[in-house]
Amino acid sequence: MLFAVFTIIAYLGALLWIMPTLAHIDAEKKPNIKAVLILGIVAVIFHIINISQHLIVSNGQNFTVANVASLISVIISAVATFALTRWKTVWFPLSIIYSLGIVTVALSTFVEGSFIKQLSENLGLMFHLSIAITSYALFFIALLYAMQLKWLDKNLKSKKMAFSPVLPPLMTVERHFFTLTLVAQGLLTIGLVTGMIYLHNFFAPEHIHKAIFSFIAWIVYNILLLGQWKLRWRGNRVLIYSISGMMLLTIAYFGSRVV
Image 1 (cartoon, rainbow, N blue to C red):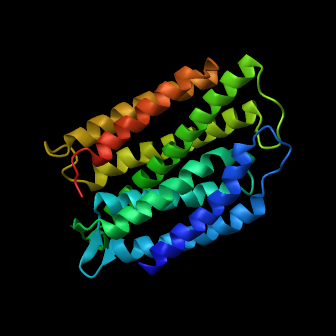
Image 2: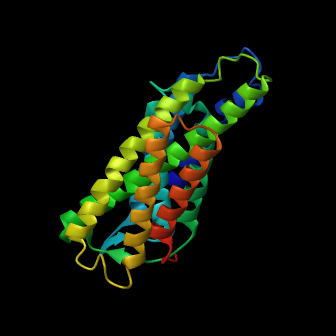
């Protein structure tokens, strides 16, 4: 409980530095990246400690939906926070990412449940799940970038957007989106292969929907990457494909689960 409180306070502290800058986007005020970075790192550390207390139990690992959501959230927060040192384009997504961190920490702390697995006895399965979860986290960040791309593209076309040090260049956001999606797609590919190798019941009736929806998502993201690389897709197409892919993966990962 104590680390959950510390985590929420740290995330809120970071948000207090981010939100005023976003609220005055047309101003010349520069974002305080150093303060957000420090608070973000502190929040991630406390978040890791908090989720480890709920996830790792005496008889195995407790993979409730709330715990898995918190685990995914801390991976997203960690990637986005450390990306802030190199990618200023992540400033916009951070407000959503840290808010999600607060929600998932609260859920994993106050929503009780039990779904025990013994991953320590199957290192191959542990590797598969780690790859799948990391892929999902990167795809989520990429979705936030797709939303940012759509917003920037719309405002630039309307010619109503004034220069601001907060606003990232459209081409840079587009490049970072492509990089995130490409890496996540590579991990998803590895996840599908390792799933077939290490999950002996991967194609069993009770699990077949995971394989099907994951593979359809893999196809959707391949089309998205090809469309952006060769056809220079932007705006609605990129956003629609990103949302579709995330929905398919969410159904695959969480569709048959309850807390």
